[in-house]
Image (cartoon, rainbow, N blue to C red; front, side, top):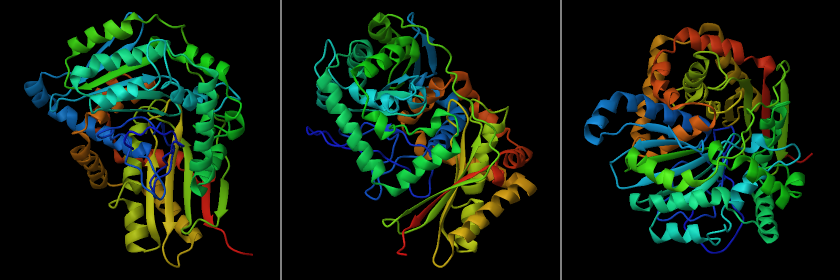
Length: 501
């Protein structure tokens, strides 16, 4: 995250930390974030800049939910706080998460529209429009929101993902009504000129060139996604394909705006030092004045064909010093899985490669000494099916082929022999301990509810999450490993140093 600045430069796209693979959220890094930014993402690192993986976020959210449930009576006794959920007359859903530990409020608007909702041939329009939302409206000049947030020492930004786009501010409670006014205004009153389109299109094109096309790992990630997903729009990068981004115009932007940026396609989440009654009154005063938009059809997307082949993608580049591999499988998400499967996949990722206590790390890094890193991740927070990933980089004289074979053997061992009850209990405990870092940030609570509701879930789903995680059995872990992590149905990407012939 960056502090306020007046110049306009290429906005960096953050990719996953070394050892993590999966999809990234694109974040608009030019917006004001002072004195500190929302900790939904890690601060940028120089080599390369990164974002938190979806798996890490999912683990943090589950941990928050697990311990939040066990501490709810205490919170209720001290704060009289209970999550409230209601609809405005125009169809906008509002969730309030009271948290009175600090005089701060996080205000987020989530639109149920992301890159996977884009029209064919218009890739990148969702992320492009996220940028355009910071332009002038009928009531506010461009940059006025930036200045208002900076004057009160707050922070704000936005990000685009496959299934949603979100805008947020972190301010003092006294500024909540003002922030609601800004967001409600730009939801329907944006004024876009041809100059706005040209300027911001140039920004996103440069963003793609500098953060993806010039990054060997990012190029490989895009090619692997395009190979893993044969039919689903998750195969298209969130930022878009360059040749289609170059053609995006004002008519495309207005059409996307009018279709998706309406109160009945949005979720408002307010977490922090507020009361539900206050938020409801302010929401009705600001968002409630907006007319209901056209009714949208269900978000039905192309379905993936059966995955029945093993595929590989290789990228060689002189800038690569350490080779690596990532093997991926298409698996169900929390929304598409059968009962208990997503929870089992989440815990499988933790047991297999969730950290230094995981099987991959202990076997490949500690005992065999053939890896510098080894991890696994499950990207469960998707509207449609998702991916499960195993990643590794070799150490010393170990070959990438040997490391890949050893990782495959660990996956196969769980599919054949399962896991012990003790191992599973320890994995669940590690989720809970994550709360030490997560529960003190109201942003995680806001993000948890927002991402769940924006992908077809409910507040009840969040509240029942802890019980579903606790009920996962060793047999379920073994079953999902055997059913989904089939070597002959995988896609593997190899990132290699380029050697002279």
